Length: 179
Ligand SMILES: CC(C)(COP(=O)(O)OP(=O)(O)OC[C@H]1O[C@@H](n2cnc3c(N)ncnc32)[C@H](O)[C@@H]1OP(=O)(O)O)[C@@H](O)C(=O)NCCC(=O)NCCS
Image (cartoon, rainbow, N blue to C red; front, side):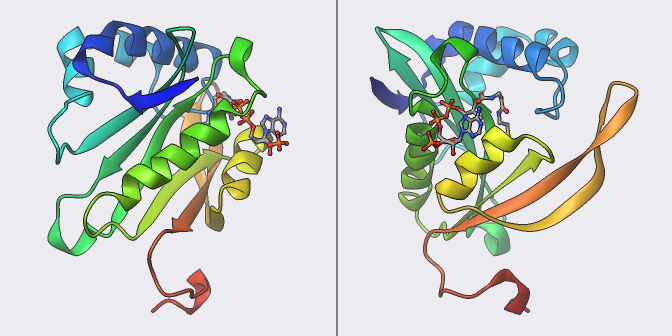
């Protein structure tokens, strides 16, 4: 098992895995398979930029040289928001689940965030009712701080999103005491 940042050369495999994720788990992601399938390969390649200060970084876990899971991290560019990064696009295909890959990916994302100068916390959103993902994030140190109702249109209805954060370098204060 190997975890490493994906590079443009991985764009085809990354695209295939994410299109599978959007198709099989439409409630879990904010992007639809149709809108992402329409994007050119160059869009996926640019998301995997190797620039040291790239706005996004995607980590991949490999088993037997095959991509077996991914998690993305986006960084803020604005001066007053640079202490925050966002975990996105977390996916482990069913054949690879419950082997600890998701946890290793989240831990690697947190380490990646901590390695970027000035980043002090990581945020994410997870669909209410996605118990596997909620349990994974909580076990990695993420704490819920709110629920966004009607966050994403999914099928005929809407799903709510739980907002979570993980402190990787701030004084230990509870979110409710932040001003
Ligand atoms: C959520 C997901 C990434 C978990 O990946 P995974 O590799 O199976 O996770 P792990 O094996 O590392 O499990 C780590 C922890 O997650 C939780 N977890 C994982 N699968 C679970 C399940 N089916 N039910 C409840 N908890 C679960 C547990 O707390 C587990 O710890 P434990 O093994 O000590 O009990 C995977 O199920 C997935 O890709 N789901 C579909 C897409 C999705 O929901 N993505 C998240 C979008 S926010």
